[in-house]
Structures are given as structure tokens and as C-alpha cells.
Image (tube, rainbow, N blue to C red; front, side):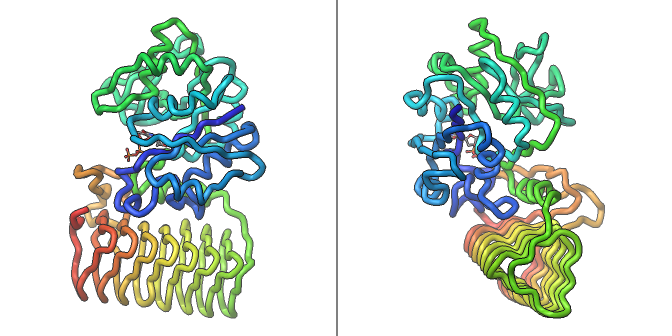
Length: 398
Ligand code: TTP
């Protein structure tokens, strides 16, 4: 069975991290986001067809022509005109039932297996606490009876997970779909069209892991979830008087210097250099060739490759893009005194992240001056700089 992976979107809500890389390549738990859904499905799929667009060449050169033993081909969606439009791009490649998988979800193998064994059209769902933030499905006698986007009065608590099995008839339904209010051709409208035509769409209910990585703090949440299953593996250099507690991975080529204390789950990627006397707490990933120096504490954070926090700093619940350099004494606030949830701006609107603890998100190559203070929920644009002693309370312009 072929799996069509939708990986063409720009990921505007993930800016500034997607200014310099396409969303499918944003590192989550130490590997590109799109590889997680591919990993979950490689046992039941005999070919991946990746729909690529924004940053297409980077995705192709990173993923290549095989994923494990499964061949990978690419179809370009030149303009990102919606998920239905993306699926229409693969019409020539399909000759039977196929899977459609959003490239930005983290999901268990079991769900993809269930979808792959369903007959005809099927949509994956899961009960959620806050259905009005999702596409919500209505079910009648185990089959789909309706699908509404982010309803004020949800007809059920079942969210549409963005994973489907389709028969080729979906292409005719896509042809019949009009542009949505947000100006896109939506796969959900094509599914509704199938229902209007009297086709049966079965519902596959999931009760395991499913995370949608669309906004910056969801990188932290997905990393937390994935690292909760981390095992121990030490292949790099670990010097004397280093304490490793809980699951810790030190990849080959990484180095953990004297006096460092690491409480897992923590992944120290190849080429990363930690300590002396650093304190790293989970769930944290220190990316390839990153640097965490003397008297630095890093907690529940993701450092992209070549990010450097050299001396005397605190980084909590944050995402630091590639090549970020924090001056000595840079500190991140990750908790409000009134204990309220941290808010972050996404595409110009302030959003409740649902997190009591959240630090900062820095685009690639941000440089802070010594003793910079960064307030909780702040985002810094790619390449932004701060002056020594500066206090950043709000986002710069992105
Ligand atoms: P979205 O998350 O709706 O869109 P996006 O990835 O562009 O992100 P943002 O809203 O932050 O700009 O997309 C869901 C999935 O579908 C995701 O895996 C990307 C993919 N997609 C395409 O392949 N082509 C498209 O035209 C669109 C809109 C999305």
C-alpha cells in the first residue's frame, strides 16, 4: 500500500523556525518531524509518496530515495493551496486504496496499522478534551456521518487526526470541492463530499499517542512525549565525575565534561559538547555540534544543531534554533508569578499555550549580549541580537 505524506506546507505558525527550514525538517526528539509519521507507518507501507513544496529540495536531500527499506518518491505541489490540492497532485501515482498522512503528526504505529487494514475510505479519530480546537467528526453506527472544523458546539469529542485511507474515488470528490473560507482546498471538504455522494467512510478510533506539531511549544510537547520512551545509550566520551541519572543518550562523537550532572531523558547528539559543570535536565535534546558550557543549566529544552549556551546561563522550556549564541549570563524566564498559562504570539495573535512553564523560541542565529533577560513566551526573529544587559519582554518583529 502507498502512503501519501503531506509535507508541502510552509509552517507559518512555526515561524521563526521555519524561516530557514521547511516544517517537515524541524527537529523533534532529535530527528526531522516528518520522519516520525514515516517511522510509524513503514511496516505497513510499501512506498512513500511525499508531497513537497516549501523547501522541497531540502526535504528531498535529507530523506533521500529510501526510508529504511521503503522506497520514497516525491511530487511537487508548486503552490500550497490546501490539503485536497496536495492530494490531487499525486493522482497519477495511485491505482488502489492508499493512505494519506499529515507530515506534521507524531503518532503510534498501531493507528497507522488499523487504518491500513480498514476497507474503503477511513478517517482516524481520537477523543480530546477540547474538541472545539479541532476538526470534529460525528459517527453513526461506526461510520462517519459528518465533519466540522473547530465548531463552537462540537457534536462529539472525537477529533479528526489528519490521517486517512482513501479509494481513488477521493480524486473525483476533490475535483468537486470549492475553495474554503481561508482560501484553501481542504481534504475535509472532499470527505464531506464523499458522504454527500452516499459513500461510506469508516471511523478508526485511536487511544494512544497523537500529537500535531504546528506551533512552537508543540515541539517541546512532542519531544517530551517521545523522550518518555528513551533508553540508555552511551557511545560518546563521558569524562570523570559526570552523573548520568535516568535515560540518557550520548551519541558517538559527543562529549560530556567533568562535573556535569544530567537527569534524563536527555539526548546529547553527535558532536555536542557539554560542561564542565553543566546541569542538563529532561526532556532535553542537545542538537548536533551544540555547546552547553560551564555553569549552564538547560531544562526541558530543544537546542538545534550548533546552538551555543557558553557560560553562566539558564535555559528552561525553550527552543533555540541552529547557530543561536547566548552571551554569558543570559537567562530565560519560564514561569509567571501569577502562575497563569504562558501566552505566545502566533501569526500576530496572542495564544494561550496551555503551559504553565514555557521559555523562549529563538530563530536561527540569534545572538544575545551578556546578561540578557528573556521573558517567558518571547520569540526572537532569525538573526536577532540583543545588547548587554537588555531585558526582552515582547517579541521583536518577525
Ligand atoms: P497545515 O498545518 O494546515 O499547514 P502548514 O503546514 O502550511 O502550517 P501553517 O498553518 O503553520 O502555515 O497543514 C497540514 C498538513 O498538510 C501539513 O503536513 C502540511 C500539509 N500541507 C500540504 O502538503 N500542502 C498544502 O497546501 C497545505 C496547506 C498543507
